[in-house]
Image (cartoon, rainbow, N blue to C red; front, side):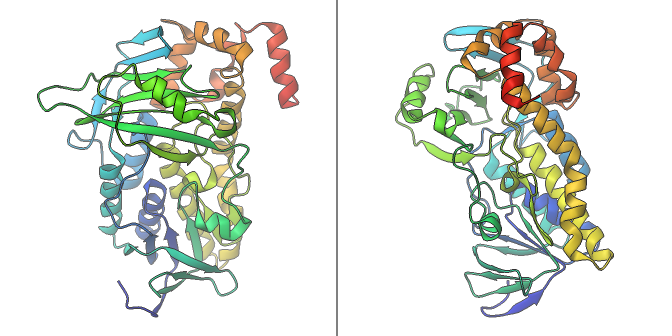
Length: 394
């Protein structure tokens, strides 16, 4: 760590040391660039997240970090239960394998892996100012880091996004989540069933995700659709023993409103800072790692071409398939969450249905949203589908 008031030059400065930031940092470092990784927190640190780690996440982690899942960090699970309140829609005993992890430990693992590749550690001091004219990031401890490309991976409340656009998200479209961590008694084993409840929140869902030593229970949805979310959480927790009177954590969550242009010139946004979260499953870890990787590759190519200011152009091109998939997911969301569609969706998700299998394949990274539209559309009343098309203008 440099002394106060020092100024250090780097090829790439990454703000935010979560999965997106560590992925960006290690990708750039492996390409031979000097990298600074900045975060206001010192690691390890806690992070609100259900901690569901899918097959898609595993693919990205293995490719980017050259590591695989292991038992100490991940709880393996192949059982999944879909609910609508007291009604069990479906129980799947042989779902594609998923893993559950504590973000405190997982993020620390990725962070340390990135440092092991020569990434420079600037955690423990928040970003204070982005000087776009001088390509310089000022930290609260007095350090000043110059960059050719800056990558903001600093979450939904992104300081970098605020510096570029004045705000980090649209309050009319942002999601919000609440959760508690329920300890598991030492002599007991976790149930090892991933549970999702589609009635726990409006335009969202509730979850119960087991870990080695605890179970993460929470709910989330579009914020403006859930004015009584704390009350909804209290009602939801009554189903689970020993889950009341625990500390409740809350956080804004991207929920489909991704940035079409994630940055400006030589400043890029990745992960939650770019709104890259699946609006159906809520999965963010896989997209965070992938977008961090793509941002670093775009930055690397732009620097090699002596054109750092064209980094965003390269990044947007690389993100096109991701953006297209998220658009298709938003269409599918309109078939799930509006009140006229809820029973249609839930019935279509029943045991053994093609929709259920495709939903699980999405989580496993075996399918894309473009492959599954017909599975629900074929069951939707024509009048309701016309309503959906009208809303989308298609």
